[in-house]
Length: 342
Ligand code: OKP
Ligand code: ZN
Image (cartoon, rainbow, N blue to C red; front, side, top):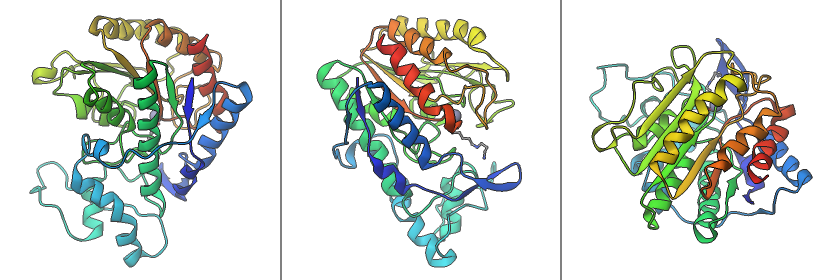
């Protein structure tokens, strides 16, 4: 399997995030990708190659131009008034309280584009988010050209980013950008399976009205878990997209044994859809030791997850999403990929 990686993810290094009312060290930190890369080298899963530059056009197929413009300038605008400290919003529009007009002031803009107060923007956030998108596009291009599978080892993650919204540690939606790239290159149908603990609300929202991308997500029930406002079972798609969105919300404490039965239903849906390519939003925050999540997978369960995904038989593009138990993170991710290859 080809693995696309760059050490330049280190540019996105925020200091703190809000957690239960306090500021704590960021869970989404550079050590995450470092330990994954090092485990992948250790087990010899495949060559780690550097990303190529596909420019901004494939990103603008998914994201709003003004949103992208905001991301490119946000830290600079913020630091002019706040100094060299991570940027956070402090005001949101609230239901029914927005005219739709985009504020000029940076604090207003942050509130306009952000979904939550848990996603700091640091000095290097934009270059790192852009690089993550290029990593996804490089891996996508490999899958497209060779029919082989690939892994985009990138951070920050992407599945909470919507067309013009950032949040949940995500800025650009790598999975959506890659899925759209397959379609733009001539594919007719792409399936995205999101196995991160958190619902991929950004990805769902991007493809909710469309029949060319099937989105299947298994996740902590949004009645209890972030992102709270999307990811319910009754969300099945809209208009032409009706029937092309499948959410499987699961209770806190879900084990692999419970999960795999639901996964089988989700993968059957993918099989029935008969896509040409599979994109996997790969989060391993379903691990029992994850500090912000509530499922109970053991490390060995990730091997089986990889095996289940490989049984579908599609050229598969893995995109790195969440997973915050640093000590086991490398093993858990490598286990999925080894299971897939075996
Ligand atoms: C991103 B991904 C801690 C509470 C949780 C958002 C979690 C985002 C997870 N501040 N905040 O899906 O792994
Ligand atoms: Zn997650």
